[in-house]
Image 1: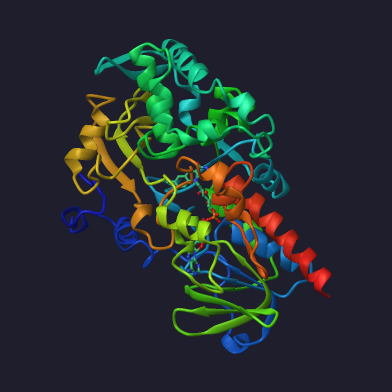
Image 2 (image 1 turned 120 degrees about the vertical axis):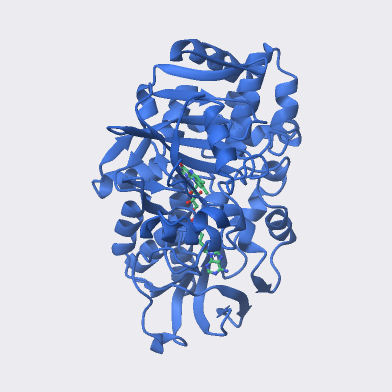
Length: 482
Ligand SMILES: Cc1cc2nc3c(=O)[nH]c(=O)nc-3n(C[C@H](O)[C@H](O)[C@H](O)COP(=O)(O)OP(=O)(O)OC[C@H]3O[C@@H](n4cnc5c(N)ncnc54)[C@H](O)[C@@H]3O)c2cc1C
C-alpha cells in the first residue's frame, strides 16, 4: 500500500507524500492554520473605527451573499471572517487530480437560490459518476448483497415510501416550514423511533434507518422525524429527485468557483483572520470586538456564523435563551465524509449499508482512466478511525472486498472551532418550538446561515437564501431608520 494519507501522526511523516498532500494533512489536523486563502485579502486597517452601515460576521456562503447584497444596495459593508479564507463549511482542495470539495459539494435545480447563482454566473456543472451506476451493494441480514441497481432501487423505494409517508401533510409548502400546525408529534420523536414503527422487511428497515442516519449525519436516534420529512418535500416529494439535489450535480472547479464569483461582485470590505469575541448593542449602534481587541461599529449587524458557534460569541444584551440553548446542544450533523482513491476500474456503483457501519453510504464519484475516487459518509468518527489506514481500507472493503485503496482524504469539521459540525439537521422539538426564535432578529442584530434557513436548511442553497433575506431585512431597516 502506498501514499495513503489522513491525519494520523504516522502517515503525516510518510516520506513519499507530496507537498500538496502535506498541506492538506496539516489543514485537516490543525483545521484552520494552513488552508489556502481565497477571496479578497484583508483591507488596510485605517478604517477600523469608522462606522459602517452593516457588518457581517462569518464569510461562508450566507455571509458572502449577505455582504454582496447589502454592499450592492449602497450600504457601507464590512465582512469579518475568523479564518484565513472564505467559504466556511465549503472547502475545495486540489486532491487526487480533481477539485474535491471536502465540505458542501452538490447542488440541484430544485434548489432555487443556489441554482439561480449558478446560472447567473454561467458555471458549468459536472455529474457524479454514480449517476450512471448499474450496480449496487446493500446489506441484508448483516450480509453483503451485490446486484443490479434496479434491484436495490426497488427496496429503497419501498423503504422511503414508508419513511416519508407523512411528508406531504407536514410540509405542503416546503419553503414555509411552519405553514401547517399540528406537526408537534412528528417533531417529538426521533427518526429511529419512527422507523421502528414502520411495517417493513428488516432489509428495508435497515435502508430507511441508514438513510435517516446519513441525512442527519448522526445516528437516526438523534434527529427529529419531522425535520427529516423536509428533505423529501423540498425534493418535490420524489426520492430520486431529492437525491439528484443531494448528491448528483456539482460545480466544475468546486464550490469555491461560485463563492469567488459572489464575492467578486461584492463591494464590501473583507477582513480575514478576524475571529469575533463579542457584540454589544448600545445607543443605536452595534460594536463588534475581535479576539485581538479591534473594534468595529455599524448601524446593523448580520451574524452569519454556524448555529453551533453562536454561543461562543458574547452578546450584550444577552441573546434569546433559546438561541443559546440550541447552539449549545448543537445540531445533529457530526459524521464523516471520506474520499477514497482506488486502483483500476470497477463498475460504477452505489453502496448503501447500515447505520452502524463505519460508512453507511459509499459510491463512485469520479471514474478516471486507471483509478476511481469513491465518496463515503458515516455517522461518527467513533465508528471510523480515520487515523488508521486499516480501518479506512476495511470500511471501503465492506462494499468492495477486493478494492485496493491508494489514497484517502477527509476533513474533521467537528473539531474545527469555526464549524463545530457538518450540515444542519435539527434534534427533536427544535423545529416546532425553537425555530422561530433562531431566525428572529434582536434589535439591531439580524441572523443568517444555512442552519436557520426556511427551505434547504443545512445546504448551500439555504445559506444563500438566508444571506439574501437578511440583507433585505437590514436594507429595509436602515431605510426605515433614516
Ligand atoms: C462534510 C459536509 C458535506 C456537505 N455537503 C453538502 C452538499 O453536498 N450540498 C450542500 O448544499 N450543502 C452541503 N453541506 C452543507 C453546507 O456546506 C453548509 O450548510 C453551508 O456551506 C453553510 O454555509 P453558512 O454560510 O451558513 O455557514 P458556514 O459555511 O459555516 O460559514 C460560517 C462562517 O462563519 C465563520 N465564523 C465562525 N465563528 C466566527 C467568529 N466568532 N468570528 C468570525 N467568523 C466566524 C466561519 O469561519 C465560517 O466561515 C455540507 C457540509 C459539510 C460539512
